[in-house]
Length: 168
Image 1 (cartoon, rainbow, N blue to C red):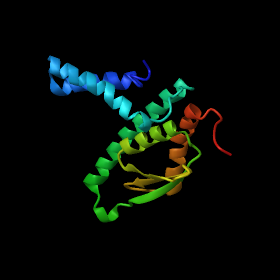
Image 2: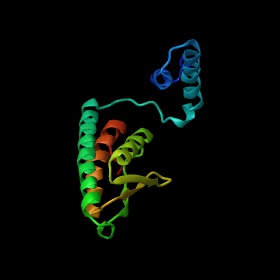
Image 3: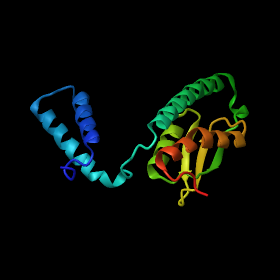
């Protein structure tokens, strides 16, 4: 069964989303949703990182809360900057963040956090996964920004995804 349906949550989500998009439950829509729910997970199986083992759910909840809070604060700050400052006064930069996190699932979560937080955008991950390039809309203090990313996001992700902890 696992070979036919490698990711039941993804299949179920695709099935439901297809029905919602078509706003119909006629036979052809149900059949196309079923085929889509079976085929897409099979052809994208190689694109997904390894299976996640949740090691510290409490840390994950705290991380989710911190990320959500930061996204709301950042949205307010970006809106204020856009409405009150001229473009010439913006300090937009690329920042290189050294990483200890190497787990593909942890890096994927970090990418989602960075991309969903207004004012930041994931730029590039080095081939050896040791450095992350982030674009920051309005950078005030580079050292503080790096320290905040490492403390608020990378450290919890290390606890969640890399049992052995940070690299030496």
